[in-house]
Image (cartoon, rainbow, N blue to C red; front, side, top):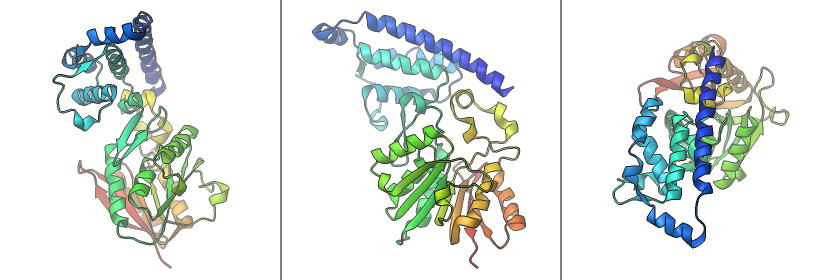
Length: 338
């Protein structure tokens, strides 16, 4: 059923994208050149408020939420301005070329392409990260999760050896490395596109000397690449797939069509990958070290029960924490000292 819905939505997207490409080609093929192009751009400038007129209704009909926010992101991107510098659109204009770019972005959003993929970058805490299709988009609540970890280790002065599983774009590890210079991070991800993007983001941010990423799928008795089997860590973090299999048909089109569903599939109870991480922590987390996970809102009580019944003497449930929406989402676990 999910595959059928995804195929239908992809067909709709293809049709919209095709129309967009044809229209864009027609416009640009007639564009003047040289100084004539500059004069034409100047005379054909359009007020941004006028350029926006029909798009709120088009986006609404396409089922897009946060319309004003989306449009402001597109205007800022086209004008090469920071989002927070756009207080209003008074006296702002698009050139003809900028108008074409703005309309292309809006058409892609009407096709339910995620905003982050359209823009090709996204801010996460203090960093601007490159984004690309098929690599999981970090959510706002993940910023809360990472902030909790940073605050927990803010006053720690000794070196911290950290491990992240399922790093995606590198948002979590790189934000922690940026905030805490005494941390080194090793990460894995099952997607080659993700590991490449995380590596690229680390290099752009100048953090690649403290960040190493491997293309690897975590499996039972093969949690990490061979060269890392004997490594131990002070801190393990992750946002494992936690969407239950039965919940997939309820996901938004942006997710079903464009995102890597493997990064979301947590199995029947949403804890399939988390259980692998618990086993890995028992073997590779140093005594007194911490395991931090971002999970679904019904998972922390389940994790506490699992710790008490299956990992007694190895791992201890410390606490569950709520996000800004008052949902119990984050867990802190400690490796028990002998």
